[in-house]
Length: 495
Image (tube, rainbow, N blue to C red; front, side, top):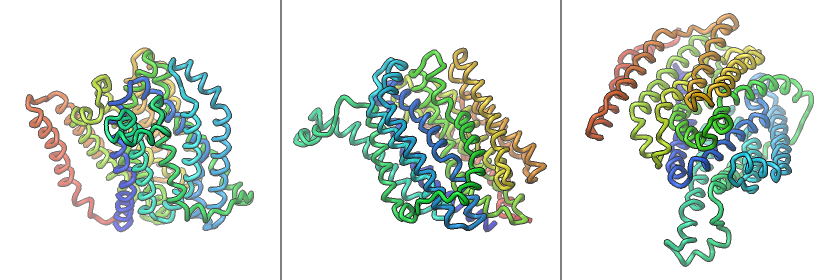
């Protein structure tokens, strides 16, 4: 249990930056849906969808590669080579986008039938560079089990982003319009442009991300720029399958962020509604992201232990239970959450997607657990197979069904893709690295949760306070039952 307690503790600390940070960021959902129209937020979602792809390309699997080689060879050059290669590619990518920005702006303006400011694309290119350049220093913190510094840096950047968006979108416009602090208007007007709107979302992100260079100064100063081929060559061969996996993973994870704008009949208007609804369903990602930060180095560090398979099975079991509880809590209270976060009624027309999206993301966490075997066995090519399966399902589901059935097809493809990936990985992994997973109780728990969610959707009390209390009691009741069933197993040592 000592290893699981350590993992739980580190997951909790990573969760401070991931969960608390994203919860704070959900305030921006309310702000954005209050200020901007669906097509405007659709463009923001579209750009950030491709930003995720750019980050996969410029890091090219080097984070996982760094974990593997740092624990395997204990060579200090591993950090220098990994960081140098990612920083160099990040810089080249940003320069390439910067040079092509005028042409991109014209193309996208025509495509979306709304003006796309060149400044926005320049700022986005700089954001991509910073995200890439800081990837390996952040990975180093994870490798060294320093979650507090990791979480602190992430939270400061998040807080800076929120503060700057409040300045650019609320306070500066109010001062400019002399609604308050009118005496500051001449000063504010020297750098505030009232013609900019969603562009300030990207500028705030850029400035806040820039703080990471100072927060990670020690890690950057430790980098000795080097591309020692004897060190880089085996890392590159290990990383390339992960890069391909990452690209296919982007199709599975992020394609819907751009596909709705490309292939649905509503275009960026549908994209705006879907992207904001998706954020409610992606509340599941709060726990998964925190878990993933902690669990990758944990799996690698425990791999040589003879009790590792039983430990991994137990880790999977309690991840799934936690994810189910989060899904239940969100889905039974989705109307209340939506009223708080989605400020305009036109953004609340697709709440029926939330349970589907959340279950799909839950299965993503299952895949993270089940797929660790091919990384431990240095058979990362299998990752290509699994993510290609997910990518084909995602692309097919979106391309062929978005135009006919709308964005519900995007939600269902999330579930189908991650289920297929998890199942395939489990079947092949049983032969390569057997782990004694016990799925029967998890299936039963899932059925119960889905029934409870269905009941909560069918029963609506006339008094809003009683209705919310009823939904909260459903969640706490199930949680207490699970605890009574699982408490003996939780504290039972691994044999």
